[in-house]
Image (tube, rainbow, N blue to C red; front, side, top):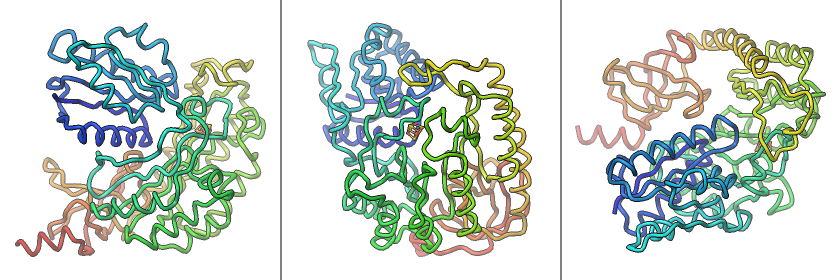
Length: 456
Ligand code: SF4
């Protein structure tokens, strides 16, 4: 019996896919990367905004075509779409055989058994998402040298536009000892870059230990492993504590990189969005980060077209972006999500206006980005090699400033052979769009490198 997986959405969802992969393989099923050869396909979906829902539905319908025209026997839908639209999925997509909400992740093998039994039946499971066991053994789907570490699940921030707290439940941290053990396991697999994720990593520990404990967790992970790069995604401005800033500043293995979604800067908008802390707080956190850690790279996201956003609010945001010169900015248009407070807000903004504002902000950011990448020319940067591009005959990887999958790449030539996972010093010669190009000047000798040299 062969099982195929389609994993959609963010790295947090990817980790759930990895846990399900492990459970399915542990039960003796074979995994196939070719959906046409699968007996069962599991689609792990995303549903936090309209475009993500559309993508999830399109993927399910593509897989449904295989059921009608090829040998596919069953489709199982899991993840956020399954949780959010639990009643509609069987009704609207009769090709689907099983639906598991986010609390049903550990019932994946039961679902496979039910939909492949001689007397096949549909299966659904919506166990309590707030008591489901977090973490679990996983099969890494990322390259050997990089992995995500999910330190918590759910969210208590309740931003007025966001469906995630309703889908994923209240914020729950994973115990520190479990996370350290998982980091050790990942290190033993050869992981060089550990990216710490959750809906809000800065809240880590409050529910379990009564205080924000991210700094302590990071300190312990670097004390008890020798993973060289620890990267932080999804921080929330009002919980970036002085202790956390000091840990990033003083711990050489915590990358000077922070993903800090701000969403807006107008006081009026931040209040309407129910973001904690206002404009002053956001400005002071950015100022403190820049002052304490002068080389920090800040990635942020902004939302335009939230109900009631005036031209003045938008102009204020543009000014802020121009003045702050963030290294990486993502801009999204507000998506009106049923079940969220903002769905019923007055003064919803016209789609074209939202789009125009997004384009305008992105144009500003492109100029900033252009200047930023050009400022890297002449520097020697540490690069984690990802692979070799056979067509262009060039190596590529990422520097401290580039998170996996979202930021740019560094392309480089090297006289010595370099392997994925090797850390290399690259002298930057030119910049193109979001990417940099350079020459390897020094290779740090890693295990992979050493072994290859020994083997000639
Ligand atoms: S912090 Fe806000 S936007 Fe992020 S998941 Fe929580 S509620 Fe949603």
